Length: 190
Ligand SMILES: O=C(O)CCC(=O)C(=O)O
Image 1 (cartoon, rainbow, N blue to C red):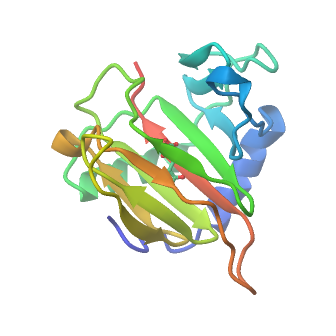
Image 2 (image 1 turned 90 degrees about the horizontal axis):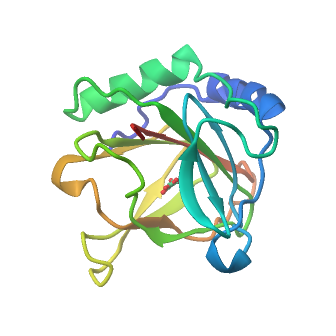
């Protein structure tokens, strides 16, 4: 955990808006046709997508058939600096999933196992409203610890922790604070 690793997140939000102008946020479906409460888009060479057919990384946005927007240089350097600060040099993310949580949006507990190279870490950047992040072990049955993730916090997990189960509880914005949370999840997909 790299608390308050980012001083000011407003420039990241501005970049997110530029990405979303080219590849809109959307609520993807999961197996069984259920709609995810978190809205998502991607930037970088590969984008994570989900549909009733399953999960996959794709080079193009299924909504437009165009390549995902390029990963802004500022995103790449942030991801690499955070990875290095957590002990992972040479992180080469080729996918940045952008999650947008409104009030009540949640991400079920899962493992990130759609990537080819499990030696590369995951770098997760929190922007806006505080989230209750749930971090478990390598088995779904292991207990979950709840970590508050604030604006500017960065969480990095890799090595023996790369496949730890994790999720995000339903967002409860606090009065007077931001009512939306964004998250950037950087991974090496291919
Ligand atoms: O929003 C977060 O903090 C975590 C996102 C996440 O777990 C994912 O995209 O797989």
